[in-house]
View 1 (cartoon, one colour):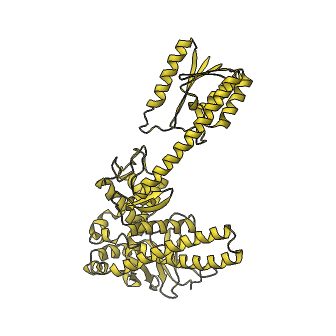
View 2 (cartoon, rainbow, N blue to C red; view 1 turned 90 degrees about the horizontal axis):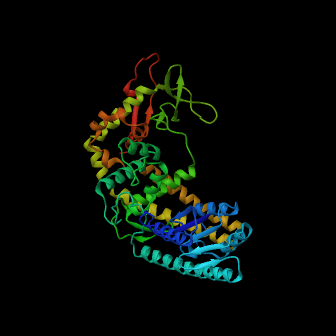
Length: 461
């Protein structure tokens, strides 16, 4: 009972035509020999030179070792192996299993005699040499394309661009623009993925968005018109960007900041971290008392507040939300936003310096690894650089929350009508785009309603 094995290392269109032709030729050869084919083992789009596991090949080896197959048919010997070491393992297995017949469409190999083994080893050595040359040529071509800013191939087009990878699809570009602005404004990847799902926006593969997929899109230099090669930006791309290079740098900085800070619990309340005690200035914390939720000034270790101020949560959240939405429609806010050019230029400089500091940190680690500097020198220099990075990231984090303003200004009434349908992350992003914090003053004992005069907003803009 014979086995047919077919493999192709690159299947550009995903239709498996290469392996289909191999199988067809092997069937014809089996018919001419009068061999009965028990099973066809196919590895499509898998290289034998790369060392990656070939599931069908491994399954065939197991069947040979078990004595269930007594011959192998393959289009050419290099479809079986492109590494001499792999051939030797195959020969050893066949010797133990008593398999000597390996027929190819191009030539016959008898592993049962010295001449056959010699020819098989020659074929494997030649195939390894050719694979090495081909791999080097491919690497050189890919590097040259990257330097020239030309796109890299792949079975799927990138989201936002057509099949040529050079032309922007405007409808998808608009979605990417919203995703970038809302992420910089503080909305989580999970919230954005849910928004895409709610609006029935699928990936180019037709699948729902996951946070990992969305993160890869937002981190990609492609959407900023930058060419990446092996994870490093090598220069401008030949295709147009969808977001600005500054937005791209700020997204990467914010992603890095989130990665360093670690996982955080999901936000539960709209004004967490945004309220201050009017008596002592300490931050207010959400706490449940009975059947009502409140924001409370907490005393004691770890909090340090006066412990003498509280406000019912829902009324203050509703009041501040209405104040934010009203402010979005005021001419003063639009005028203030128009004067942000100098601030944006300053932030762009901070982003550039941040990138330089991170690169210097990597160079410092490489210098220590190469024993060019001592541990003491490495620690001293690292502390200075990390302090600069921390200060820059904090400054960017404070500024990031205003990125969504251009799309929010003038839309306060529309957002108010849709407020109840927006998720908590979206609420927080909108509020934090305008509000730095709010001070809650003391209330009248026994009051059953919130006095608006107790709430003093400190606006960012």
